[in-house]
Image 1 (cartoon, rainbow, N blue to C red):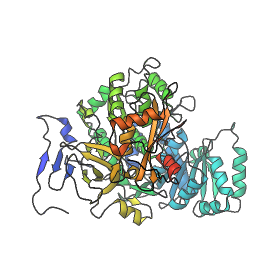
Image 2: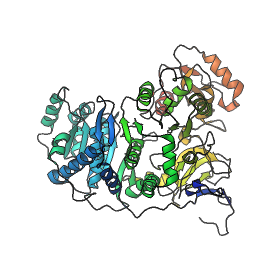
Image 3: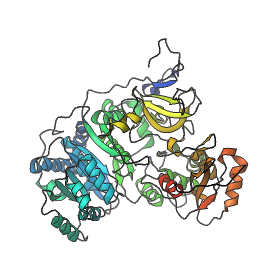
Image 4: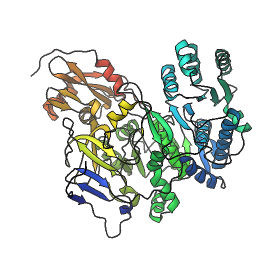
Length: 607
């Protein structure tokens, strides 16, 4: 609630002429302990995401600029002109051949591909809502998402995902759930040399008594015409744009809804820069000479959707990648002289542990952005020193896109190492005590709360989960633990759900992991709490040793005991594993390791 008295604030004054002031006017309310960015965020008159994309692609269609290069299909190129026209034709076919309705939801299940990019933009052009299924998901997750989103159209990849659909349709309960709303299956990435025909015939047989039809992307593009207007359906700023399903680490996966407005606000700065032709901003991009980008983010993930739309609006050419092993990415960097090399946490660890400069020409790389999980400070320092690049540590979530940013790099400013940045224009941030919920001042650790226009609408048909995440004052509870300094810079400590208690102490796994990763023999590590009868939890480390290195359990346990606090000792031991599982964007899959220990109960007595 607002204070009855005028709050005392600390304002970070801009220099006499500082273009950064257009983006970062930070005020710290020292009474309510709120960090605000009060820089004017001049949102243009509302336009839908479809209109913004239409404007950008229409302009680029008059050039010979390549939009995408498919690294998985012999570097096949898709020009902006063909991308734009084929997307419109696909949308036209949906509308005219299948009588698409505005209230329908389109489901995508595929790895990155040109067909995916075309049909995704085409779907956006219609004005309907879409929801991507993670490419690695199986028949249960696919069924649940189609059912929960009430998806009526499924666009699916024939290479890997089609057999999953067939398996789901062979299960009677899954089939009933899928066909409750589904009326059309659209096949993409078909290849006559693939063994898809038998699977397609099986699916057709299963569907013969249903009203669900099957069509093919290429045919729909060929049969479709132009569009009289984009988007086809009238779209309000609060209309649902995309439903992104969370990973489900806290239970059943939930559909986080972003409206046209929240997505517009998330990418709005980029749009404004393009529209306003800001000289300083353009100089920033010129300075990095970014002609090509590497697009390895899964389109089935929120980051993939976000980045693809941003890249279209910025009219850049991207190399589309599915096999995102670091060595392959670096080879493409060398070939295409990539300047911005976005990496996952796993990639960053590899870059820090190894020196790839002899193997690949990385002289074009000027900046490495990374997000997804906390990056140890020693890794950041190692990469910056070794590769002579600027490292940008990012922060965001499915529910709140681009709310905290490191913006200084845009104008050649110096970054603080270890911070993920400060609030974006129009965004507020505060830290609350994990026990009392009371707002905390600078340098005090607690849960991170943020509020602003980029915030998601809520969880699809899940009012309880929405209220648990967005409080009555509109604050989004991130579930992350962190603190801010006296300049309003945010530092991440850990996830609340990763925190566990040893007696009266709170233990944050990432603090222990960051220390263990300093050992040059350690490739990857995941620290979890193992249930204990008396002490709450004891700490265990699962470690993957680097190839060609050796390490003993005693070395790690003794090192932690000698250097870290009493509460952080590895009382549940160390277990060496061949592989540390990771998510599609390179984060350690903690859920897997927590499942390994959930049925254990330690009883050993300790000091």
